[in-house]
Length: 339
Image (cartoon, rainbow, N blue to C red; front, side, top):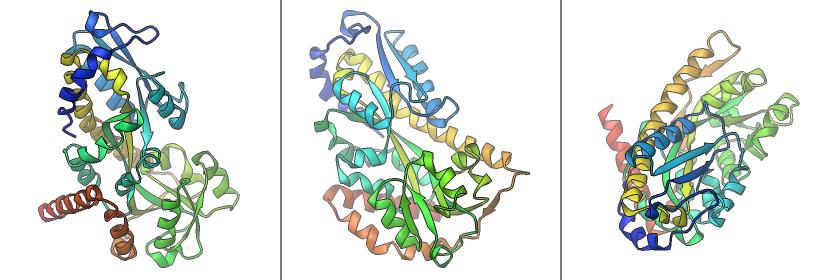
């Protein structure tokens, strides 16, 4: 993302800076400590991106601004962390795209099935200015987006291989608690069963569902292969997690430090994507010798054909989604031509 243009707009608000408990005002020369809520552990790629950003911000501001990351849901789950950012109780949080969609449904385009072709395709979009207009739309809700992290492709894992829509017929697949995800599984040929991620291991082992969908890191790391040994690379969508902050938190910083903050939060997106690719490769390598079968000969085109009308309905929601749809597809075609 190229969001340094926001610095000028926020410069006027910097005079409204206020003091959080335990945090000084940057304009007065004191150190400002920005608290970050993160619900996963320190081994996850998102944490690596945040940790890199924290170190860079402290170094580039010569210690005037620090970031303290609270992992493992210490400050609450994603939804409550979002609310705390809006209330000014904490400064930043990592939240899933589905939460942002509840404020503006246009964000659903980023979770649209078969929209991104690869991790690199998603990275190119998230390190450009293509989404800036979309991100501007959430500022009225008391938060803003400063980074967009990729969370890999989502794939079907189950008790049997899935190579085509016909293979999913009659299969019950756990999905996130989202109407869009339920509709997605229907179009893929199966039945989407919404439930929390914490329930899916036991649900599969007890036969409540036949499988679920996730990325390689979670599949191997959380040992889902124990109950569903077939990981079919359907790559039906690419997940997104956003780093959000409050305009009031940014306003505590001097204009110079605001510019540094935004610059670093832009740059840390590449760090997170690099970490995701590396950790995915490591997880796949660690699966050797385990009861895991990766299914690579999935008929992606057969799945894509079922989503043409669905994609168009989401793409035509607004002028913003139309523009994003066209630009993302154009970049996707360009990447294909380079291969």
